[in-house]
Image (tube, rainbow, N blue to C red):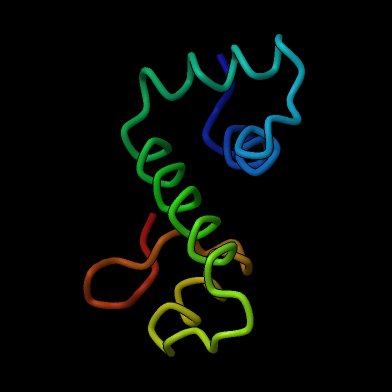
Length: 85
């Protein structure tokens, strides 16, 4: 089974339906056992939907900070606004 680091690496390709069958199946198997990565996937799916529908709108500052943390590899921010492990 793949670990969380590998699952996060594959996440956007999975959302774009760009993973081959084997890596996609490994990713889905990981999701069955990992609640954290399921949350990351749902956040990423929501982010992708928002970005697609936002067009040229400016993102709210709290959302922009969350995206910046994810892109920097800090994981999802906790409810208080700080990154966690």
